[in-house]
View (cartoon, rainbow, N blue to C red):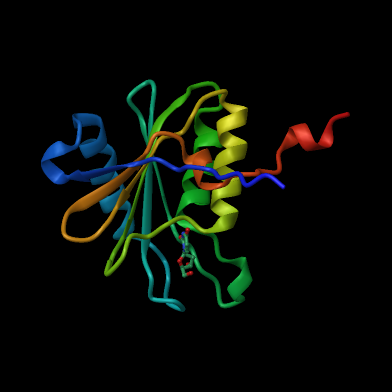
Length: 157
Ligand code: THU
């Protein structure tokens, strides 16, 4: 038997440690959270993706009376990016939640979607997550959040 482990590294940042790009992307996510449509969960999530051309792509959660139809903020932003900028790389994604007593980590489905977009755009997608008391978690590669990923390489022979 052999024990193995996977290490996930990330930065814990205070607001004054954010780069200008991180500040800009988080500000956009905070703006996006304001128009989340979540009357059923009352949990608002905002996402923003900074693109290499300086453009910002936003997303927020969109719910439905048929609960499973709702979509998370991250995937709204990612699909929006795929529509608007199929040929421009993302620089980073920022995430925030409206009433945070803990960081709003992406759900498993959104992690899977991030991995797909990372492969599709041939780049890491760094992820900045707002935590409590104006502190932040920064992952250089969102894909780290989903080890042992299923992707297109599983499907090819
Ligand atoms: N939600 C997101 O937008 N992103 C996540 O990664 C987790 C959950 C949304 C979906 C739903 O509208 C609400 O939060 C409660 O689950």
